[in-house]
Image (cartoon, rainbow, N blue to C red):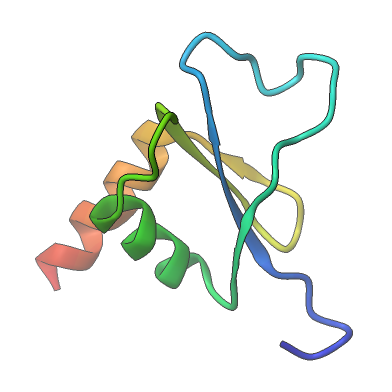
Length: 77
């Protein structure tokens, strides 16, 4: 990753947590691309976590249905 490039961050939250709830975000897995983060989220199951969320370099937050759709689109190609 270059210094001027923000990583894609994959984080896991309890299903009941709201993205705009107060408090710090948990530690994240960092990736160079959304595609890499989506592949990890769909093929790995970190223990004691329920729901994957992605934060893109531009700050957009992708929740589970969006991650699943990106995975399905990737599989269609």
